[in-house]
Amino acid sequence: VYVEGEDIVIDFVYSNNPGLDAWVSLWPADSDPQALPSPSAFWNYICSDSQSSACGAQPTGGAVTLNADSEGSWTWPITCGSWKAYLIASGGDMLSFSSVAASEAFTVGGAATCENEVCNASPEDASPTNTHLVPSEGAPITKVAFGSCYKPDGQTHGSDLWQHVRNNFGSSSVWNWLGDNMYQDTNDSQAKRNAYNTARSNSYYTTYGPIAEPKIPTTGTWDDHDYGIENYGNNYECRQSSQNEFVYHFNVPDTDPRHPAYGGGQQEGIYSAYMFQSDTGAPGIHLINLDARYHRSPTFTSYGSCEAASSTMLGATQWSWLENELNRPSEVKIIGSGTQVLPPTHRGRSLSNYCAYDGTGNTFDAANLELGEGPAFEGTNYEAWAEIPQERTRMLKLVQESINAGNAKQVIFISGDQHWAEMMVKEIPSRSGQAAVSVYEVTGSGIDQKWPFTVVNTNRLRPEDFGFGLRRDLQGLRVQEDNTRNLNAATAIKSITYSGSNTCSGDSLHICSATANYGGIEVDWAN
Image (cartoon, rainbow, N blue to C red; front, side):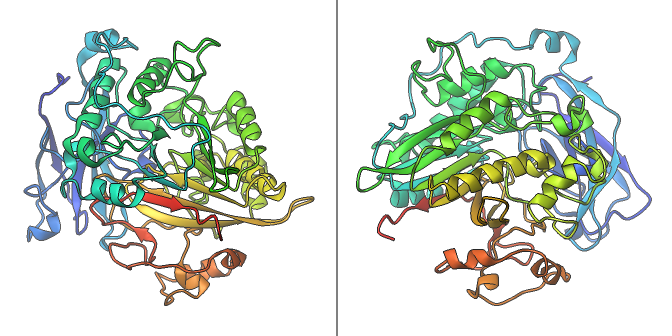
């Protein structure tokens, strides 16, 4: 048992060379080993805090100390909980990584601390300084900028990103956070509040970010690390108290159903929508933010009892709300999700490992086939809507109906979570009464965080597929994908400009090694 703030020392020994690179990482003990390596809480390389491949000969054993100086996606110190350490190594090609060894589970905080930490309310008032400006329904907005996975103390290039946001999205704009808006995996509401306060009071954020004058209206959704605990959904026991901290952070008024003092009773979940005006005063950008955490069913057995075909991403009430939103006419609908929507189901693990799986040929398989995605389609092995393909297909069919009913000319998903940036396109096949439509997704994730590794995604947008660049192959994957996916979406793309730098996976629009990134959408009403 470790106490909060104490250095955690992991001893390791191995007989087989683990590859060109290896590190020791901490994850909650209930994490799915087959999903590793996902961005870990804390990690260090096994050799002198540097890449082991640069050390000459790799050690066959040693110790790694994890503390406040360690890299990772969480904020030190680790609080109450059960943890495991994993040795992560490459397969020798520096492209694929996996867990090759794991420790026994150990506890941080002790039982007494855990008991006292359950869903406690914040004893201190929310900070009245450095407040966000809430968007106004019906405001004239032409641009939406967005980002996620925010570590304020890790911004190595100072204010560069926020100055870029301010220069390009400083007027007629909204800033939309897409989750992991701070990192505090805990039940402790005061710890979450402190982390939110730190995020807002960062000097770069206060000088150039959305809360600097003139303020950029700000809204958004959450993901696991600000919501609750890594990869948790409806199994997180402190959902309501966490929602209250989200509300205070975003300065949501008590006239909003997300607020605990809302007269009609507080909404369960932080989903929201704003309808903004175009240049003519008509409904223009319809910004919809989903809550893919509060009601989400367990995706693997480590997060609770499986619900098979009954698994949900949004819960019945939010689905009904979303259907109503999609029936509201607008020029463009932008739908924010903390996790990615368009990547196909990852098939690198047995499908039976997914909680939503209900056997060969049943609703899990049928949902993927309805979208034209058979075994040749592949997506990220990290969290995504495709872990519950029944719900992903439901979402895309609703979007298809909205477009075909004339309620939007285009739907664009925006997402975070992954510590990289990418653009995706998906043609939703025609079906009875519904013409085929193409939808897009932009992921903007990492301020400042990155994940510079290959991640296969059949639905990634590739300029060369549409005649805007040179073709490239990666281990033959491109040929297979070109034979399976429909590329009729080319008719909606007029041009693509890209630098080709900081990329992975052989794809021009998978930006994996940039120090930080964010996304932006600007609507040209005349075209």
